[in-house]
Length: 433
Image (cartoon, rainbow, N blue to C red; front, side, top):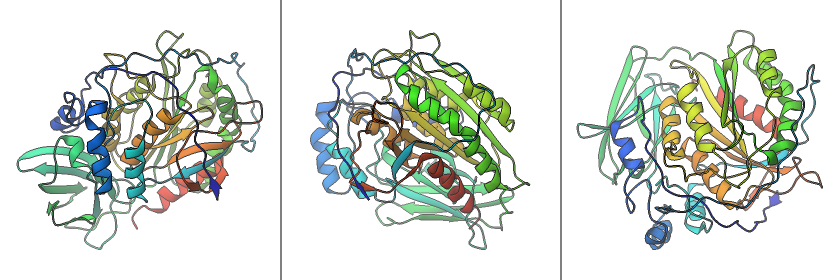
């Protein structure tokens, strides 16, 4: 086990959020995530601090964000552009990482949120968390089931179950607290519903379908979402060197009868040569490799980057499967999101969009990440039942990789490519259990 150290946080960030049309999600979600200061979604930093700490002592937490802050101005170093490679050999990754599953130790996550003392970002109020689990008549878990949560006659949340049949429901994210809910689930021709009282049912909320679900398809979609600003040169080079190995091992894991596709979203910041570039899902690994080779690390300037534009593109413009599939995103970044743009899609809204589509958001914090970046990444990963990963060795620094800021007390370390492949295997193994 490795003991963690913490780095000092930077100065300055952020501002006011804008609106996001949550196509295909419950209408109430948008209102909750774009609420006025002092309510769910975006809250004032000072006004909520005492409430956060009080909630944490009762097993809940909700760190808050400011109504208005200027954008950061501290410069980040940039790296020279790197020429595209061809005929890349399969190579072992020099990158090593630790990880934490904040849903596995949720009380510790709430304590982390309450103790966060970096610059305020956006808020996902997870003070209440309920695990929805869909099973069929034989008791097997049902992935990619369509879930609808209603409070009375109002639909407050829609989502797809993940590979293990589970999904999370956080009432306060939707502007609610406690109460009674009816949850319905459908998959193919089978359906089921159940009612739950938050005051009486603290464990899993199980929804049983009225029939036996067919064996789930072993289709896999893997998206790599990369911060492509100048300071990411080392990590992007390492990803180039190992993408063939990761893809080949994932293909081997899936078997010959399965469909595996890979996508790519790269982002920088406004004022750079480009802000977002994408490659929709393809099963042509050669074409995918060529796209990755064309992404060089450049631009950036100030510390936060336009992660929000990258994540919005990933959720709205890529061809995520509507039917059976395991849908995974690996977000690789060394900086927090820039949230001062008035027309930006809040990353909190994109997290909700990911849940609607059944997409898990695994985050990978890279060398130089400060506490603000950790905070945003852990929010996104916890909300979608994924893990926060962080580099411990390798990457971009004179000594072979600077540490990533994190507040994880202890963790197991592994090679990053092994960790990614293991994550995929675990998701596939959960299908239909």
